[in-house]
Amino acid sequence: MFGGGNNYVDRRDKLVDRLAKRVDDEATLEAMRAVPRHEFVPEPRRNRAYEDHPLPIGDDQTISAPHMVAIMTDVLDLSPGETVLEIGTGCGYHAAVTAEVVGAESVYSVEYSAALAERAHETLASLGYGEISIRQGDGHEGWPEHAPYDAAYLTCATASVPDAVLEQVRTGGRVLAPVGNRRQRLELLRKTEVGLEREDHGGVRFVEMRGK
Image 1 (cartoon, rainbow, N blue to C red):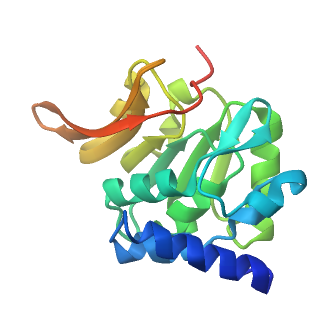
Image 2 (tube, rainbow, N blue to C red; image 1 turned 90 degrees about the horizontal axis):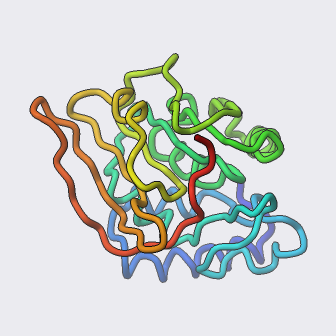
C-alpha cells in the first residue's frame, strides 16, 4: 500500500528476490514486496530494515526476520477474506503483511504491551492499514469477540498453544506457532472434527510470550 523512498524500494525488491528462493507462493512474495518494513523499524536502525534478521523495536521485543514472516505467511496458506487472529502485534509489520493477503479488515491482533500496541496502531494507520483491529491485552485469552477465525498465528514462543486461541479458531481452521522455550519448533495445527493434526516446520527462535 505504501512504497517509501526509491532506495528502500530497491532494497526491498532485492530482499524479496532472495526470499523467492525459499518461498514460491506469489501472494506471499507480493505481500512482502508491498509492505515497507523500514517504516516499522525504529529510526536508529532503519537503515538495516532490509537485512534478513530480527531487529529490536523496544520493550525487549523484536521485529521478526523477513524470511520468517514470509515462511509463516506461506505455511498458513491464507486466502483473501479469511479472518485471522494474530497474537503479538509488536510493531505491526507482520499484521501488515497478513493484511496484504486477506484484507486489513480481516486481521485482528492482540499485543501485551500498551506502548507497542499504540505505536503499531499509529504506524499501520499512517500506511493505509487502519482497518486492522488491534487491542492491548493478554494473548493467552485471544480475542473472543470476533471468533471464530479461519486462522491464527503467534509471533512469540509458547510452551503450548493457548487453549483460548485454539477454541476461537473454527473447525477446519489452522493455528501456527513457535512452540517450546529454549528449543522451539514452528508447528502448524489443523483443527479437525476429531482433534488436532500437527505439522512440524523446523526449528525457530522467537521471544517468549508474555502474560499469564
